[in-house]
Length: 370
Image (cartoon, rainbow, N blue to C red; front, top):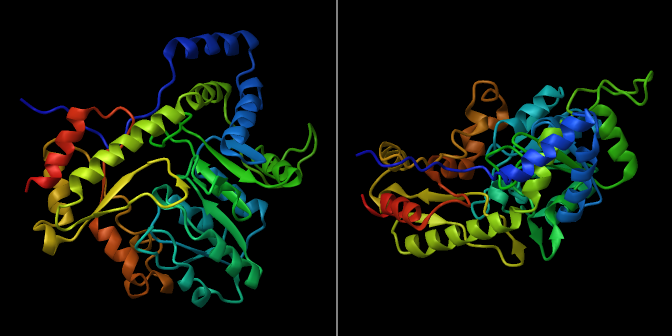
């Protein structure tokens, strides 16, 4: 008998009856896109939940990255991390800018502020850090560097929905922060994203850019793109916002179970909660020291896969190793020893709000039994 498949994630789904009622309302209104009722309602609700002043909704999580660079008129070189989803670097490239890779810190998998200054040149205009796995990077130190050199800071906060440090949203750091609402995230609108900014004028520019640059029926003020979100996904997201706290609480219990079970397993490392941080438990990465564990990361990964436990080597391979980017001087593995090490050791265990006790026991047994 084949064991049931345990996936790395499971989407947060709204109550079907409630969703059907909202669908009827949308159908009756005949307003299904272009800044409708639920679009406006969701933006307002997300501002309140995330404790941010302005948010613009997008149809996916990549377009906010592209638009942030456009809205801030970024040119030249952008310092970023190779340890992320490839959309982070793609957004820089699509804007005609040059990505410059900087190594990461082992304790967060975020960009190492101590390595940033050495990468700054006269062409550098911005820094794009990533709150990897929802672990906040050293925002204060990054801002100090940005202020010293007159650089903009755009945070890829795709994993950081609801994450706070000492009661303050991480989304308020820097010049802008982007979010992903993909189905694999803690909070989702099926597919979607958002861009957070700090003032009304900037939000207006973002909203122009995501709607072809239209500033009225007959006026186009910028070379914009179509990034609008339909009413169906906004209604879906509005319902999901009601249950995201419970989903995060369930994920926290999974993280606690994993930590307790794996704390004495030789060759396994994982992250503990950071002091003063409200985590969202978006992922649970473990890192395999093959010499101590007695098995390589890939051997464990494929053993799990054969038994229908689907972890994810996230982020492997590094962005800097892809053919598109490996020719950059900053992409050399010699420049990125920590990122290379972490990418070669990581497996994200299944982490979602619907994991049962039996599921968790089975996942743990895969790791502890060699």
